[in-house]
Image 1: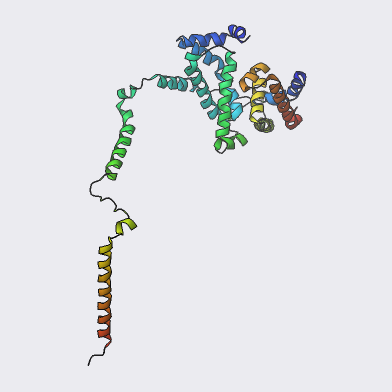
Image 2: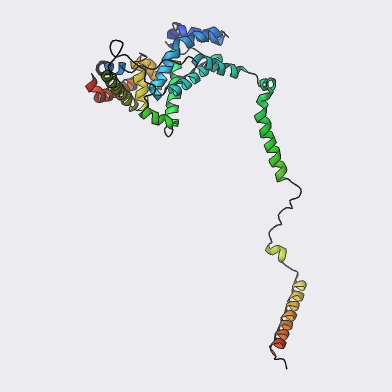
Length: 193
Length: 120
């Protein structure tokens, strides 16, 4: 079944070309997945510099593994498995360092967003920033595995089976993780609905 | 279960949609390809860039200097600690040593006695 799925996976085909020495295919994979990997890592660690550093490591590991690559699963599953592994390690390693401080309060990476029209009022901007900070805190407060599961499900639209492979657990465990995570978020963010 | 998850997700979708990730920096690809290029270098590539040998050379000099300092010829090795075995004497030598000590004690007594007598 995994083999059949992989046969349809264009990314896996590209990776096999990289394995055969086609550097351009690596460029295509990078172009296709760069943003999603960086954004996933950014939401995991909530620091854009750290996220980019980790994302570089992800793609570097993909490149290093080209010789031994076997398309046993979807390419994105493999990619996010590497990314999640690095993110969880970084979160654990940096618990006593500045990363954790930034997790609590890092507003420097907030993208500027127009709430309405071209010029949001100061009040609208303040309300938006307050809401955004609340969302970040709510996600940051989730246990690491729940956080990873929610980010893959919500922002990357990954299937339960893929998330299960990434997190190395069963599909039912993923569903349980997701349900608890969304319930926790609902409790904290209900007033924003 | 899946319906419950979707319902819970829908309730927070709007809030989570507020959180946009910042754009990836323009330097991302360049840095990545630079790291890949560095990994591709053969082990002897630094020979082509002598300036990269400076830190290695400095470390070697420090190591050699430390080795020479430790092994410098002017420094006498520390004397071995005295032990009971080293101080043990043969029985005949011990007896003569005791005799000498007794003679010295007798001599000291006589000297003190002379010194105690008032001079006339």
